[in-house]
Length: 503
Image 1 (tube, rainbow, N blue to C red):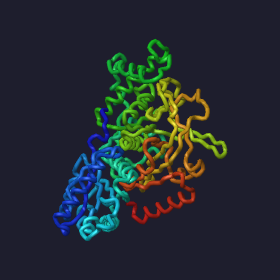
Image 2 (image 1 turned 180 degrees about the vertical axis):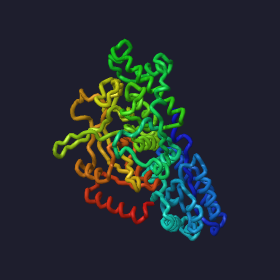
Image 3 (image 1 turned 135 degrees about the vertical axis):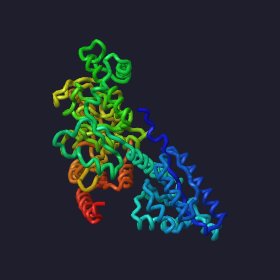
Image 4 (image 1 turned 60 degrees about the horizontal axis):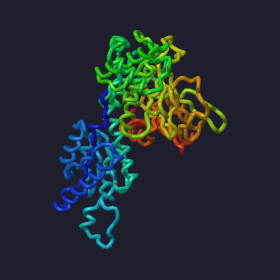
């Protein structure tokens, strides 16, 4: 996959005013809008171009501009700013039809007031303080989902928050065209990995398309194919290859088989335009080993992945990778696997059977082969490493039957306290915030799944923005969380959802 997920995206700056102010004032509004857009466009933390659209001064201009934004494949969302007063009833036709992400930027062009020079011309031009309140009222009255950012547009914090929303908007844009290939079915009798795929497409945009495992098996190239030989060379150059996997080694044929599976998976995903996929060790007919290194390397190249048929995790991994494009720190499929529970110093050991993305690795991974100890297939090849220390977030998307919910927890990744010489999988060790009991009890109360997206590139705000855009419930567990507050929040959310009639 040639993947530049943000390459053709942009956000539009739409500035509101009205004809009442006259041509001279409107010309200044337009000039300021273009200067502001150019400054944001040149800001390194904002990952896509910011395009200034003509100042809108009428109901028809607003409606036409927002419809154009909706119709544009490039436009990921709109930043709205009321430089002057823009009567809110003009916005009703456009906002009621508008479907893309919206950020309400509450700012003003000048940072400081020229106290000795202020006259009524200045006051008529610089009316964001009440122009944006008028806009805030109508978006609230209409129930328009939006992010609100207040502060001067030159402030780094303001720009960072705009950047975070921009990444969420791009993730949402990706979700609208994302297809998840589900090879085989869900792991038998597992609940939290499954859900309503039709409702997911209605609410979140992505589709889940089923494929037989035979689609991959029939695409397996010959062991001596150029694609396989080239991939074997890449493995040798990129990783610390176990001696038994090297040419002439006792398990080299298993490495060849892993390369064949990777080539086949890539070909099938590319053929069907799928940027995320699932598999399950319970359904490998025609494939002799579970795709380990293949899944890991596909994730490293930007694909989403979910094990055991977990299509929600696969979609969210891909969306998060789009949101994180170009940022330091990696993003991976993950699972809370087991605990270390010394009193007051509890740790989570996150891992999976095989499929952790090397984008989160601390150093060069090793390429190894070991028994899977489950499923009865041949020993799979995998990359083994520890995750890099630092702050991260784990996020799950759960289907509660009447709605979807994001559950997210801030964590602090550490180096493993001791060596793990007999654990032949990639892993991450972390302390959940605010502490083990509160974090885990809150996660369980919220119904958070056992599969997650782990990212060291994005923070909670990015996923909160994504949830707001999607109209999906968001539950955050962070340093300030208490169990009482979390439980109350869940009760209030449930009540609010029922009052809203499940909307």
